[in-house]
Image (cartoon, rainbow, N blue to C red; front, top):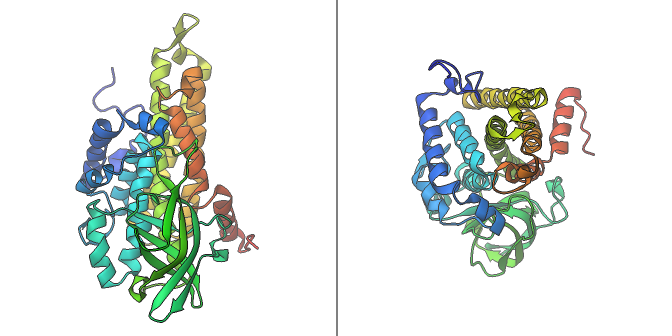
Length: 391
């Protein structure tokens, strides 16, 4: 039996000992919520391809929506507390973490950072409470990694704007009450708040996904949608606006995927302790122990990287390149751990009776969204060489 002072087998380096009291409270609160409300249902939601919108106000009551923002009913917690919340949410399912991070970092953040006082007052308290859902419209059917080439347009028409175009792969799009949509204008790229029900604004959910199934993913269509002048975000122009939002979301991702990886590791370790083949536990085999040892080493490195970047963010010194390194490295690590865990579970690893294949499939989407692995590789290559390989 381990002594009381021994570290947990899944946290050999005592990474969580570095958390403060507030961060531990967030960790324990989210773990209880996911254990009670999510884990008993998430495999069924994944199989059915749905995630109940009713979860949003429940999460809002926990203070997790826009929790890293100040005012307007937001909790105003630190970056590490936000990262810990993302980690524990994604330990249950990536779709759940996506629901929360899109709401807080991609929909609420641009309103909080760049919106007018009227926009903030109208939307942020409702979104923090989970009474209104938001989404972020940047990616287009023909322009994913190259948002500067977007074809969605907004043109002036008297005091109003006319918005035309389409967005693709939009998390929360089908349930959103407000869409933060980025469009090209004569004055550069601008952000617009498009409410559900605006004439000419329609959504269509994307089905037949084999990844992120417990998540609503949608297409957004804008057929000459007339918006008042007050719909534009006044505080930013150009790609700096959406890219700053993506940096916020990527920070949550580089924490979140460590939760998915931890769940896969814990599942594989428990399976190895109980599964018997050739008359003995498979955890007694050297090959299995080697897999587990490297999975743990990789997991703890990813956790330490997330913690370090959290400290940089709280100090106000974090850079987009550092976030790119964290997102690129930790997502790849999480995928590798999920795949290795699947081999330990054998054929049982491909069923929803265990969480491993669900996490592995979800992580394939995370590898692509909020900047593909290739794009983050090039961002780091530019930081290293001073040469852009994009064009």
